[in-house]
Length: 194
Image 1 (cartoon, one colour):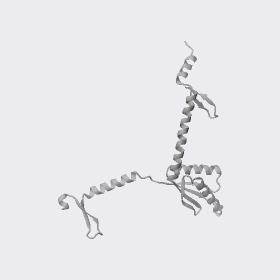
Image 2: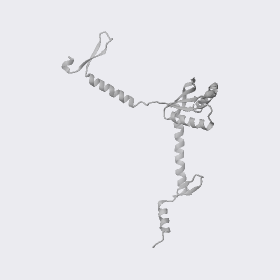
Image 3: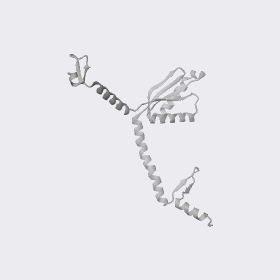
Image 4: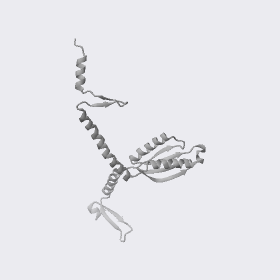
């Protein structure tokens, strides 16, 4: 019967009693299955495990910098492994590394969850933080109204000041910006006529 229809006889469930078989074009079936898998993979987000390393003798500013880096990675959707590397005799005081990791986790608790608590592996103590989607979404909603307010404020200031726009230099001094027509008029005045 399969030869008459020019299709394949494919066994679907061998363990069933009696065994189940279907008449189908097996090549086309494999192609469609691969196509479905490619489509499913396209819509998935690949989560990477990124690492932030530090040593126990780290200064406050450096910790802040490492935390900002970890926060950026978490906002991008990646997991972050925060590692404290012990050198020499530093390994005799693992509580310093544990306190440091707890401090980092506490600072990032508003956007991340601890997936793996602190553990000592050889000379490295590490924790794994994963982004908390709910907390990130809530933070994004909080920031959204602030952005709208910030955008409306300069527009209102420009309306009060008239047509002349102002700029601010690094020291905070404000000065008027010239319109291109004003610059052309100034250039005409300055040029001596032959």
